[in-house]
Image 1 (spheres, rainbow, N blue to C red):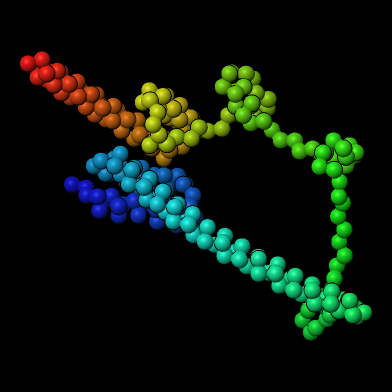
Image 2 (cartoon, rainbow, N blue to C red; image 1 turned 45 degrees about the vertical axis):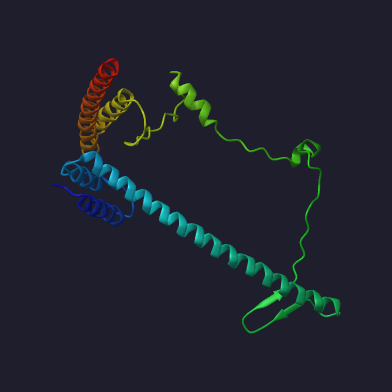
Length: 231
């Protein structure tokens, strides 16, 4: 019988396999993942353990990123402060009539003159030749057109839909997504991905059957409670 400890160790092995592949989910890694899930007695629980481990790892890395950002910000602040001190020293030399420039065996420092332009906040008040307009694609409008069945220009196509096994979506809609991916992978001969989708569809059948059993049991319990209440 597969224990929680076994699933935790298995999830750790999958994580190590992915990390050894530079974090990329290659066909070999996907095949390893599919085999691991298939060999688990409770496939859904195996997926849940792996998802939880990946999420925990992501949260840990996020905390590390925040700590590193804070350290980087401290270094930048200290650097700016020391630059201001050095600028003050050069300004003091200039105020005493000396050249605001110093040179040592390994460095040179001087005051650089900079100038900026001040203008109205209203962009329309600036001459048209001094305005810049940023043009970017409206992806939301393009996706809406694709979903409506409109013809898309060359080079524009819908991206691959993201699928999460833990998403709270109707099983019918999930089955349609899986079937679309299965046909896509079959055409592209992506065997490892096709095996993963097939395994997911089998697992979906099992989950639906289990849900029907639970629903029948719940209806039976409700009927019994109603009978007891009438007595």
